[in-house]
Amino acid sequence: MATVDEIAPSRARATGLSLTSWVLFASSGPVAKAVMATGWSPAAVTAVRIGLAAVLLVPVVGVLRPRALRFRRGDLWLLLGYGVLGVAGVQLFFFVAVARVPVGVAMVLVNLAPALVALWVRVVRRTRLPGAVWLGIGLAVAGLALVAQIWQGARLDLPGVAAGLGAAICSAGYFLLGEHGASRHDPFGLTAAGLAIGAVVVMAVSPPWTLPTGLFAAPADLGGLRVPVWLALVALAVAGTVLPYLAGLQSLRALPSAVASVLALVEPLVAAALAWLLLGQTLGPAQLAGAVILLAGAVVVQVAGPKPVSAGVDVVRT
Image (cartoon, rainbow, N blue to C red; front, side, top):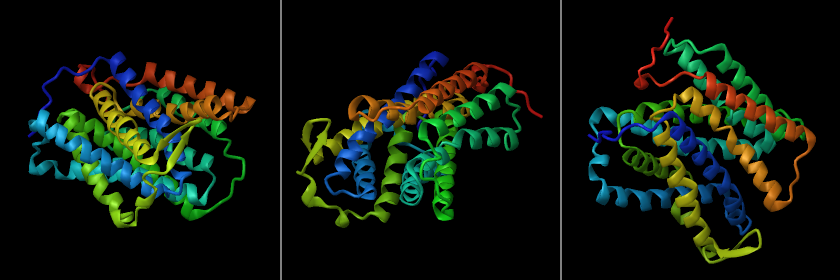
């Protein structure tokens, strides 16, 4: 079994790791968009991104940290849940959602995950969360709605809404399972196993023989910098997948899932800022106000949120 023998990161360092994780996830957006502009489908990009990440990480962990890949039979459901929900499910459901409803609506739906995590902690774990945490979650989601401008082109499409909610459930699973797994296993081993399982699931949807292999050498335009698609895909796999998943799991060793899930709302905010800076997509007054509200909500949750049980802080149960 892979054991966690390092000292868990401090709360401040864990917060930094969590934010780093979501900044990396957000910054991968322009790269993925550049690849898709060459003719790649979202499902194909996701399949190569996750598959290549697994191919790169699993051998490295196997050579440098072989004990991290030793799991017990009882860990099977944790690994399957993390790989299927936290790696593959979020991506696949989100792509279905954006194909049927406006992107802003899909973003808000998938980012309902913090509320789902908080409900799970309260109802299933029977852990009382401070009222300020619920307030902060509400502020963050409301701010995200303003940033995403969900009122533009909004239409009701039940399959699309269902897919968005499915992505939110999978995202909540990422935090809850990641929190549980990070307290028991080496983040490198858990990330490698999760990516390998997620790759199998995604490639079942987008098999390797359906990939547009003739476009691997096509030039992808990254803000005026033209690079071959294969290099952009490697960047997506390493900087946009392996590193953020590792940082996210490491942060969950010291951050409760209810807190870490709200910090994830920084991702669409960073994506909007990058679009503003790199693509000239300016933010309107409502979006700027939403950004302030979102950040305020995240700060409220960070300050008022529960401490991890492993930190020695008593948890109030009812």
